Structures are given as C-alpha cells and as structure tokens.
Image (cartoon, rainbow, N blue to C red; front, side, top):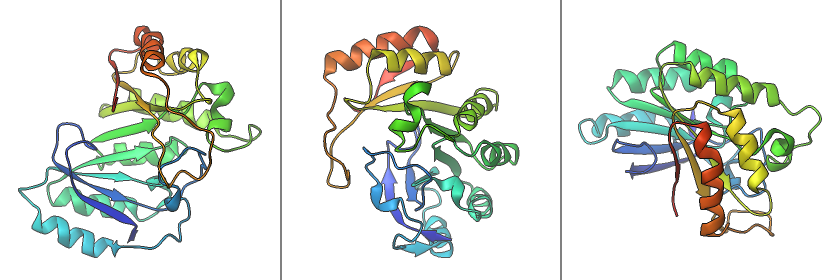
Length: 231
C-alpha cells in the first residue's frame, strides 16, 4: 500500500498518545476548504510503502504509542485492514480519521478490533452537507453519514465528532442541525478554518472567536462534551 505522507511524531492527532500520522491519498469528497487537496487523487506521489512504514514503526516501538491514519479518505484503501492488523501486532494503538461515507467498512474495522479510536468529520447540517463537501445534493450519501454516526455511538470504542467551521458555509443554523444529528455523542469539537496554500478555492474565512463560542453554546446541550479546538 502506498503511503502518501507521514508525520513521524505528533502529540495532537491522537489524543492522549504519542503517535505518528500516516496520510493516505484518495478522497470521494472535494470539500472546497480542504487543507489536504493534494491528497484528493489516489495517484498522489508516495513517500513510502507499507513495508517501509512497518519497518519505521518497528524501530519506534517503546517510543510511539499509536498510529493515526488520515487522508484523503483512508477507508477507500482496500489494503488498510491488512496494514492495520500488522500495526496492531506490533503493539500500537490505531486511530482512524474518516468522512463517514463508508459505514460498512467502518463497522468491519471496529468489529475486527483493528481500530481503537475514530475521528469523524461532521461537515454541516443535513441541508448543506453536500454543498460543504463539494458535491451535488442529488445522490449525496446522507444516509451513509447518519449510519456511520450511529455505528460510532454504539461501537464501544473511543470516538469524536468534529466540524471545521468556515465562513460563509457555517452559521448558527448549521450547529443546531449538527447538534440534532449527533445528539448524545461523547465528544464533539469545533475547529476553526485556517487558510493555507493547499486550499484551492478563495472566499473562505475563519469565524470570529465570538461566533465560534456562540456556535459551541448551541451544540453543548446536545452532547456530553463539546470544545473548540485550535483557537
């Protein structure tokens, strides 16, 4: 399996653990504010393969606690379960970042004990979900998103939901709708958008601190724990 990027040490991507972050290319969404647009195509350049990744992790046993897979959308990679199995055999915890469009694959990983924590992006309220993902509303797999939410909330593993808040795509109504979607969730984070060179489209802004705090207040009654991350 091609590995399209690696951050060899992170204290942020896997809460509570010293980890590395593995980037996998290929995504079925095209969020216009995405920081990792260079990973949209599955043909993005590789920096190593899975054998080299495992060799790297073998040398980091006792120094790293976990491995976080992100993308792109990692669940598009058919080789992922096999690679996760080998990583678990080395004694590492595994975290997965996902957009929630592949609930059956997500359920399988949880059922096989291959993932210890999942972070799922909640892009917006249902009415604006497809727009926020750069997709047409007709045919957008909203049912898959809801199914993934349900799987995580009943899956018996650590999970978090998170939203990158970006103007003009989000407003107070966004977070009322998000709150309803994830009612009863354990953890939810609002992450303010920050512009980068890899964001392909213009016209997006970081919400003001006061807006973020107001939106947080809207979601808090729906979930057990809600925070702003990265402000």
